[in-house]
Image (cartoon, rainbow, N blue to C red; front, side, top):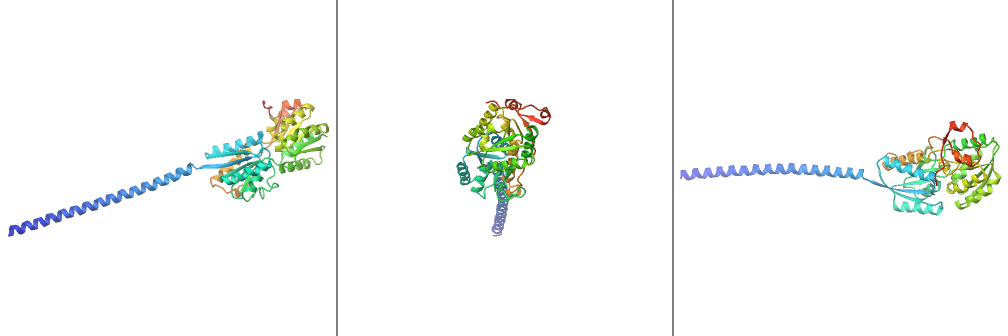
Length: 356
């Protein structure tokens, strides 16, 4: 009996040892599973964060670009705008739409951009900017090639634009004054012909500025107004007999048909003064102007600040072009019967007529 009892105790002890081993093994497995689970959870979290960061880095912005008409200055401004966004490393899909100088198209383009829920509208020229501003108060609008942003009702003031619109104007405060002084100095006593679209607010503002700058000087003015580019040649033909110089401000309608004004000026040897350097490449004689690529680029930098959330539209003041200087086309000067002044060799930057 004692032998049996001893064997029973030994069996119980063995069972206890086996049971304890199994319990310990199970606990160890649970800890490993818990550790593996925690590591897996951490990996999942990190993976999600990485994916979110990647999505943020790869965000594609959609920009609707509304351009009133196609001509070199506006084209250069758009090129500068695109370059600024590319240099910032943003992935952008551009939808460029030209209104072809038609106000009805301006509204349609703006309404379509709003319906498409683009991230930002780039408005290139005053009519396009006004159309965009009338279409939305929510989508950010950045403009350029606008002469008088306050007068056009686009912003409350240059320093504090308010609302959803800001940008870079294309008229340096001294550009018209310097141009008028240039005409008065080198064509003293001249009758100056002004051709412009009275329906373009920016043009009306410039014509008023021209007359104001000429107060007290020797110049007088003759005007012709046009409603569309088809009327430009007729206006130039009828004005040329009454003037000594023609001065074309940055009027989109007239500039889009500048070739016809150049032809009339060359045929009658009438000096053609223009509002920006790109018009010199089309045959204008002289201007105190700006580089449209530069103001387009600065507008693009503003767009980057808005899209990335660095600044709100209303916190970005409207800016003037950084500088102006005298530009002259020597070939055009000769064709238009201009007597060369040696001073221009020292103070002007020269532009050649572009090949057709």
